[in-house]
Every structure is written in C-alpha cells, then in structure tokens.
Image (cartoon, rainbow, N blue to C red):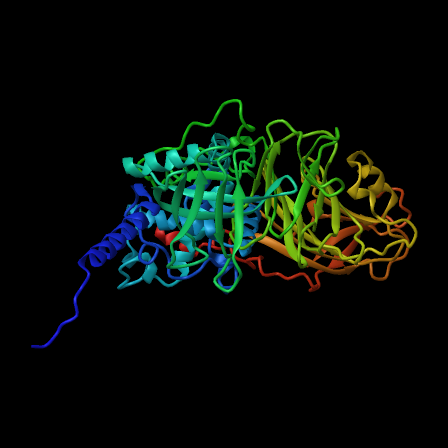
Amino acid sequence: MKDYPRFNYAIILTAIYLIVASFSNTAQAQGKIIAKLNFDPKSNGFGFPNYGNEHAGWKGDLGVADLISMFGAEAVCKSGNSPQNCVLKAAAQEWMTEQLDGMKGGHCEGMSTTALRFNSGLPFKGMNSPADFLSGATSPFSLTRGKTLDNYIAYYFVTQSFSEVARPSKETAQKGPVAIVNMLVEAMNAGKDTYSLGIYKMVNGQPKDGHAITPFAVEDDGDQFKIHIYDNNNPGETKFMTVEKGGKQTWKYVAAINPNESEDAYIGDTDTKTLELTATSWRDGKCFEAPFAPDGKGTTGCSSVSTGATRPPTPASAAPKPGEGADFSVTGDANMMIVQGDGKKVGFNPADDKFYDEIPNAELDSTKGGKGENLPHYQLPFHETGEPFTVVLSGKDQKKESDGNFNYSGPGFSVGFENLKLDPNETLAFQVSPDGEELTFLETPDGEMPTVKFAFDTDGKSYKAEIRGTDLKKDGNDKVDEVEGDPSKLNEEFEKHPALTVKFDDESGKLQIKDNDGDEDEFDVDLTQFGADGHHQHIQLNDLGEKDSGEDAYEIEVGEWDGGDDIPVKHDDEGNGFDDDQEEEVKNENNDIEDEDDPGNQSLFVYNGYYSFFW
C-alpha cells in the first residue's frame, strides 16, 4: 500500500487564518469610503496631460462670444450686442489677450472643472457629451484636443480670476483642511454640486505654484482622511491626498507636474491656508464683474450656462463695486509686490523675504496653472487720483529666466508691459498711475526693456498702442539696488536712474514718450484707433528719433491723426515741454513690433470670433 504524507491540519488552519486576517487588516488599512462620485480617472478624466500654449491656435481659444457670456454685451462691445455684430472694445480685447497668454503656465483649472462638468452632464454651448466634441468618443478619456474642447477648457480656466469665484474659494481656505473634507463629503453624498480642489505651496510666506485637481472620493482612514484625486498632470492615475484629523490638520499631496518630472510635495495645515475648494456652480448663472468695464456695465446680455445652482452672494463689505477694481496680473513666473503712494504694500518683498497684506480689501491670488510657475494676480480698490502704484517683480527662487507680461486693468482701460525678461534673483521695478495713463519702467541691470502697451476706450474712439524703446544704458555709477529695500525709497530710485516713461491722455489723444538715460535713442510705435462702426486705422512708426539730437521726448498727436499714412509728432529736444515745438508729419513705416494681434482692416468683432456660431 502506497504511503501518503501526513498533513498537520492545525498548521494548515492557522495559515488559512493568518491569510484571511492579513486581507482583513489590509482592507481595514485602506479605510472606509464615506463619500464618492461616479468617477474614474481612466474614463472620466482626460487622456492627455495638462498643457500650456504649445498648440498653434492658442490665441483663438477664447473669442467674442465667450466675453459676452462672461460679462455681458454692454461690458465688452463698443457697439452691437451679439457675437455676430459686436465691435469688441480695446480694453476687452487686451484683457482677453492677457488671459490667453497666462495659460502658458498650464490649464489645470479648466481641465479640472470641465472633467467635473462632463461627469455631471452639464452643457457648454449646446454640447453635453464627449461625442458632441468628437464623433465616436464614449468618455472624456477618449477625447483628443481640438478647437472646441480647447475653447471649453480655456473658458473655465479664466473663471478662476473673477472675484465672484476667487472670493468664496478663499473663504473655504479659512475654514481649515478638515472642514474642507467635510464640505466634500456633504457635496458628494448630496449629489447637487461638485468641487475642484486648489492647492498651493507656501514659500517665504506666500502661496505660489497653484494647481487645481479633481477630488472624486473621500476615505476615512482612522487618524486621517484620504482624498482620491484625478490630477490632470498625470492622466489615468488615481492620486491621494492625506488630511490629518487632529493637531494642525496637516495635509500632504505628492505628484509631478508632468509624467516626465520627479514627484514633488504640496504640504499645508490650518496656518498656511493653502487648501481651497471651488464649486462648479459658482462659475455660471449671471454676469461677472468685468475688470475693464466702467460704471459696472456688465449686468445684461450674458448667455448663462446654468449648472442648476447659483453662486453664493457677494459680501457687501468685501471688494470694490463693479467698475471700481484695479486688477494686476503677471503671465510669467515671478513674485510681485505692489506699493501704494502711502507706502502700504501687498505681495512679496525681496528685501526681507516677507509677504505683505497691508492694503484693505485687497484680494491676493496666484493663478492655478499647474505647471510649477508662480503667476500672481492681485485685485485692489481702484482710486482714480493719487500717487502711482509702484510694482516690484522679483525672480527669487526661480531656476531659469521667465518671459511674461504684466497687465493692469481698470474702468475703461487695460495697460502694461509685454516681454518682461526676469532672471533668477533679478528685480524689476516700474510705476503705473491709478488711471492707467502713465507708465514708467526703471532701467534693469542688463538694460533689457519691455514693450509698453495701452488699450483705452472712450465714448468716442477706442485706442491701442504699443511702444518699444532702445534698451536703457546704465550710467556706470550708482547701481539700482534700492528697489529691494525700503519701499519709501522707490520714488527716489525712479528720479536717480534712467527710466522710460510713456503717457497717453485719452481725452486729448496725446501720446508722450521720453527717457532720461542721456543717449540718443529710438522708438518703435504701433497705433490703432477705431469707432463704434468697427472700422479702424492703423499706423506704424519705425525708429522714431533716429536722426534727432537733444532730449528723447516725443508727443504723438493721435487726436489730430486723420487715419492716413502719416501722423503729426512733436520733438521736445530742449526738454522744456512741447508748447514751443512744431509738429512734423511722420510717415507710416513697418517696424520690429510683431503685429499678430492686429486684425488688419477688418471690423474688430470679426477678430477672434471663431466660436460665435456656437451661441
């Protein structure tokens, strides 16, 4: 008879028990799901990663129809009230251009929001499902990018900058991490609204490197909560954020800004206020306040895309009324500090590595792009008279040169600087008058000068101007270093050192340009003017002042220009004012300023109007 090995059944039963216990412990370690959406990153997220402005058509990702939907026809149209007949105001066009440029730092806010909207079946321009955007698509993950989807994402990216969205988002940050988790749990279980989760890093006292991610489940894991995340930088993956229940409620999220980068940690607690929620419902339902619209003209004509809920009421004591806000933004990686005439300041001061918030009712944000760049966006009360704002940009903590724009918008205007080159640890300083009519740029250590830009709307004509000057030369004696010191000394620096000043009086139509570096410099100028009929005139001046001696001071008589191929100009060679100077006609001549944003001799409502038919 064949012998069979004997088994120790006690050992076998013990082994089985240990295996079962192990699975049980693993399940317990994974915690209990206490709230969730019907969402899977491999289906409901996008199959492509967060992107910047690498695609050729990024300047068309927003159009006239989008601005009317956001702000109403009164706010954005010089005449007309629909995408088909709107003559877009100069300030509205310039503001839109800057918003598009700011998306080069990533589209995470738009991607997070649109993923949630797809999941909830919410419409955009009559389209609900993925198949409406791409024939045959069965899920957002199967979509490929194209004009309509890029427009959808860009539209909701922009909404993060509106006070009606940013203000309640910041209020959630004040509640603390555990309260935010409870808000998520309540919303997911109720099924009435969804939230994007905003995260920031706290560096030198300032929140930066903003990123928007999509929470879709909450797990109770004993001493901590675990939030399940779709991160648009990492398509198809499920990421996790942990939130400690006790102590300072420390939260931590580890991810990479793109699949080819090493992972980095976002960490915060009750003190940092770097974790926030933004409800999908806050982004639709009525007109937003346009930062460039005078007299609050932004309350009619909006094409609402309803989410079935309305935004929370704006606190009456909060930020300025419509048409009374001053909007400052930077579209490149930078730290920003703004100093009022009374010395009060907001933002990061590179002199002492501190972040200040001294101006009452100022709203301080960092645009959430998700690609690891600090894109400050500040909104201050608008004061029509008074001392200029001094703006200090610094490259503290930057690893490479940044190339971006600065934009300042207020009632009826949008002005600023283009092609600001900011090196690591470099400081740039400039001043803007509260009414936007005068801008002064202080020399830089390497002499690089940006392009000055103006966009003004009056009851009569609208104007756009771009001015590029020769790089300012350092005088070789004093260094420009006080801009990093006491803000009260900033005005002295602008008087001591070479600076370029450009002033535009929209009532008289006089454009004045001057510098004080002692050299004989030239200026390139682009001018556009148009009326309510949309017909506009455009002229270019090339190397203005090339053959002139004396002071570099010119006054271009835009108000006297008849729209022809030459324009009257005065040269104040003696530096004693323009009253004793004779006008000379300067002819139109192509210059080196890129003319991509000029629509030629078309009506302005045609410009960027690709998406008009969707409405």
